[in-house]
Length: 130
Image (cartoon, rainbow, N blue to C red; front, side, top):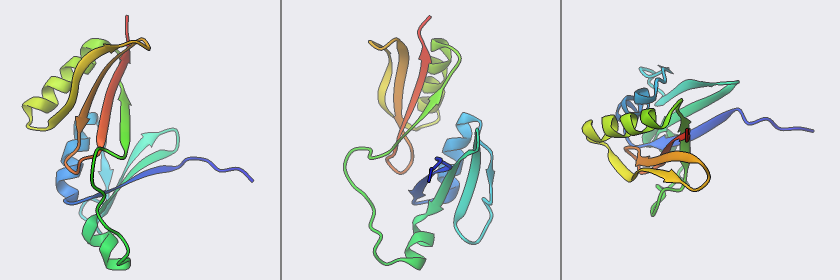
């Protein structure tokens, strides 16, 4: 038996707000107007990002509760150059999103930055250093 990663799921407070955030990374969502509170974007290589509204999750399970504390999940986006990491971070800050850590040169050879999505999940931006 073998398993293959197929999707990353994130529960969000407001589906349209989260879709708008992730569209900043070039993602296109299907199902955004679905009454079921679920939308998906193709991440490539058969992997997809699934967003589900809290209301939709609570409608079929009463056991779900919102996580709290530091980001528990991080989605990482790779860029072609360190300058692109800096530019995307600046663009997101200019759009009113929150930074976790501004761009820096990581000791493992990457330009790195971290932001927080509208629901508190971590989103990393990285590129190989020249």
